[in-house]
Length: 447
Image (cartoon, rainbow, N blue to C red; front, side):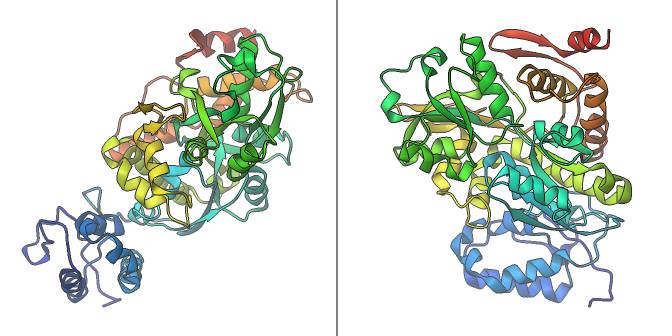
């Protein structure tokens, strides 16, 4: 039937002969029967739609290699326009086969879960997600063209565009992946002695990368307490997967890091959560979806379909009702390779803090794709403050924010997907209780 037009069927299909079961499939016999029925009808059912009806199978589905191959084959068939969120849509893309790099942290949730839950297929793309251990690794792969797009730290889109610490590669922050979702974790030996950031003096503290929100937030937090981040502590770059081990061996005293490695330290009884970064800056940005300007210019339709996939997945991730499903999907070996209970604790915000308390913080991590330009200006100011722009002079921060943070691209994708976006590009941020008004700062910088 490869030459025939196939009906793209999903949960809202109204064709009587194409009806799917009202309840989840719960045994192998039903699974085989519906697989056969789908093949006989020549239907195309996305992986995401199928998962809705097969949740009762659990491990049986995962063990069914033939079924997964079948679903993968379905995804490659010609697709018509879809009217519901569970079906594929036609996309006239120039380059359907793509590779996206990611780091195994919960910040990458939209990029990762768009694979097993089917958002890339929905928008007409065949995406391979490729895992890297650290930010230098993924940066180098991104620059070399080993990946078409990448999970990047938000400040990395600025550093790459300015040529800071690497070759200059004009890069666009096409969407924010997550807000919040980080924490300061300390070794257990400090439980009774450390009460505030002022007590961090003399510590060795890990961050995942120089051009990271983790580094900039840690420096801001320490400076606000009266410490000099360059003299009173040692800030050391540590790959996220190595952080818990470094804490256990005593090579570092703590870290400001992405999850799940804060929660993993508690899980391993290696440390405790001292402070969530949301308590420093509520709804602060962290990771981003980065794309080269060269790719956008060469493959505009592919870029738009890819961005819609990411924005769609980000909105799906923002719904707390989906968090347990997502935890199950991304905790596996090919993605985060973490205990499901650890990932679930992060995504649901119901977690042990390592101090004997069980916390309920629904916005411990959240997902919002809109790349406020006020984020970019704050990052640039802090990068300048701590000497990361020392070889750059006469920088126009508002212009850089306009070039790198693609608010209009996200607005277009959001509108087409039926989601709303802010009308403004700037907003007032509340950081450690103080207002940061980037619009006023940018006016002063221009003057």
